[in-house]
Amino acid sequence: MPKCPKCGKEVYFAEKKTSMGKDWHNFCLKCEKCNKTLTPGSHSVHDDKPYCNPCYGAAFGPGGVRMGTSGADSYKR
Image (cartoon, rainbow, N blue to C red; front, side, top):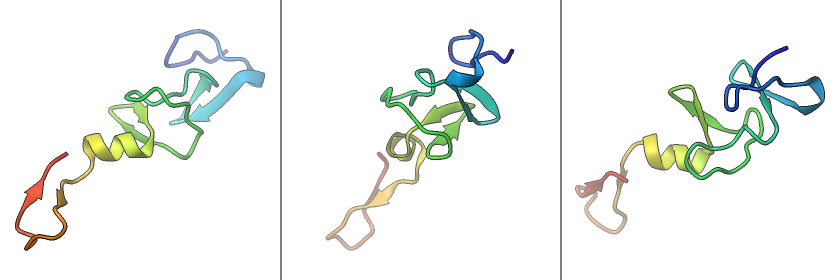
């Protein structure tokens, strides 16, 4: 029986979500930052941990450019 990577308990067929090549409990597949419940295939991964796309972009995405300026001012979130 596969073990959930989050809680380490056995994952039964009726309660599993498969993501990142592993089987998770429905309630264990959550964003590492905001704790939002995720659905397989609609999230991002960093260091083998799942993140919702907004949290992933804020934490690991590229810096942006301030709008309304010459474009020379860049910032990192």
